[in-house]
Length: 134
Image 1 (cartoon, helix red, strand yellow):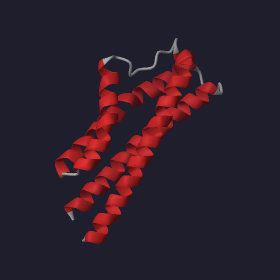
Image 2 (cartoon, rainbow, N blue to C red):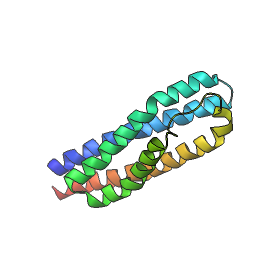
Image 3 (cartoon, rainbow, N blue to C red):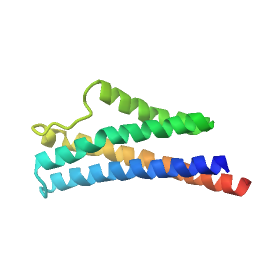
């Protein structure tokens, strides 16, 4: 039962991180199509960057504590990238440079969406596997 609960918590953490990244992509697309001004878009994205990092760290820590070593190893590159971006002070979008950074920021977030989608699929498979095993 504990294994199932850990997979459920992992699933909900992944969905939360996925929703945050998807919202960031939508903000960048709205900015690209000129539906929103740069200040609003950058401020909305900047508010969500640190919670995304914290949720990803909590997800990796959950896998580490619960003994899901493979999932922890799969989560580590994303966590390392987030830590590297945060320590280099590149985690916030600059309002004056947002149009120059827009294609790169969209690529990063789309890559994150793909990576999180793969993690979500693996998590669902492992959750179903733990249900069947019990």
